[in-house]
Length: 490
Image (cartoon, rainbow, N blue to C red; front, side, top):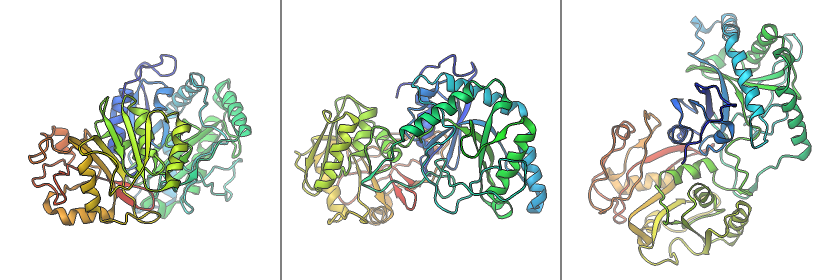
């Protein structure tokens, strides 16, 4: 990943503060990525969010692969605490959270306008009729009223790339076509962005705010009530007008037991919605994260022996171009979908697709440098073979010094843990101070893994002793990640 240079016109000299939402378990991957790709500083995370400071421009930030959504940070502080969580006092504290530092709001609005003006790709910031992924029913989002009234308002079903707690929605079903933005909607977005960018004063802005409450705060105040209080405070403080349909400015606020944060979403479409994928399979952020720890080198041969719709191969080929990629699958329908994705991404000439079973791969022994694969969970597609025999066939084609990255269901992970005994590593739970991560097949296939750096030790990387009984494969580390409704292990 090459670090992007700054655009002097789009960011202040000292850098600006942003945050991204991330799937549960992907925060370490995103922390490493913003450091490498954006030369970010002051990188820190809380569950589901990564905060950072960077001088990089918006087109560079659009290249983030492990993030769900991107926000310009307005304010972040410790959680609102009121003794006994008295409702009236809690609402007063929320109002104070909005009003106590008007300068941070004006500074953020000024920077937001610059970002609108200097987006070299011409895709304007998401303010108006954005088309985000829908959030599950029952989550607390709300919109402030148009008028200065304390009347009941509708709850708007709107996603900011977060799942059941601070998370993005789960993976799209295999075969589901990604939604395309309507041309009329594009025109409305463009007009709204132009209006916001050229507004003469902050008072000219229209806005809407979506608020989410979680933890103990949610037991006392709903997101709707919190959003109403915040909206009224902004109206009184800055003279902005609320507009639920076509606002110039959209604001997101999250109040939890761990933090209070407010920001401006910067993109119309979530970063996780890849424009180069025609049909969605495995969630792209997960696919990219798997490829990122494979240490893919130029000239390597990378295999996905159960490629499905080819998401892993496409994500890898987009990031690491000078590599030969091969995908195999036993299903004709999956291969047809993968072929469509390769053509849509312009990668058909760089990725070869083969029909074949993972239990009998049409490849010679020790011919593959890297294997990356999403092992079917058995809901839509079943393996038909024990996970042990499949690993043995993968091991046969894998070169010595090779790397294998697998996405396993909790059941498959448990089986490997049971058969591997103490050789299976403990699972990372996200308590990472500096996520420099590796997953290597031991070069001599017998000894201990390479010496870990202090940051790796802080990430719970441990040497493992014995190889698995299925062969000479040595597991180095596993990462628990969220797929939305279920969890999995890389």
